[in-house]
Length: 350
Picture (cartoon, rainbow, N blue to C red):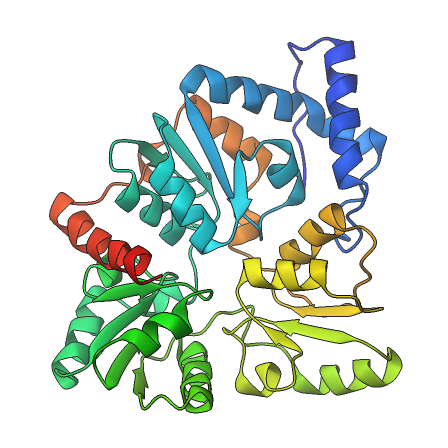
């Protein structure tokens, strides 16, 4: 991360107080080799976090940050941080003129679907998602024509046009409950092929007769973990607990002690006693737990999402001052309403 040096309008005392506030949180981050957090690096960031927090008040803005973005965003300027489900709720509840979504574009689309009255902006319009971008609305319509009797369920990691074609949207925290409750035996689940695999296993474990059909998308973070790493790490670190996301392969989830959503993984690690944890997910989540539960010890295993790391404090500052047209999320109203129905159904069924 690089911060451009500019003349600060804040006093030395204000900057020092902000640097100390940041240090109290960021000093616990250990897994991020890109930046070592100490009082000097916090002093570099402090003028920018002060400016952003001032701009939020002036612009009547709220910042939503996914757990995978940089820790200085989460602990420096975010009003709310969490997983897709939690941020969906916060977007729905938001009463602000502008929502800055520090995450990836499909998440900002979800915020616009739920808060149409707000101007929703993204710090970087190139922050896509390998999973969401793997399926278009047109392709989903072709799949629906091939499986006309199927209930259509989309993972929240999908575009607005895909959500608009579905019966219900789900997150990794409620997917099993909602799929089990669907009246159709055949379920067309999109866009995550690996999560579909894990749904089949869970439905079988629960004794629920469902036929799961899926498209072929995967997450470039969660589809890359090596199951051999788990066996090697258990040998070297007795008592190790392995935590993974249902976007991972069955070879990973089948060897894990806990499989769950981003929020579920955080809760499990915080509440579980173990000498070591290996988190097979995006590294930002490990950084959050290092801050909030610094007594926990982690074995390397996480991976970085290049799209989430496109977010930065400077980009957030700039989009608060004057968003470019490509940074503003615009949705045609009929499509927005159709997508909203699938998300509202999720809230009802959750």
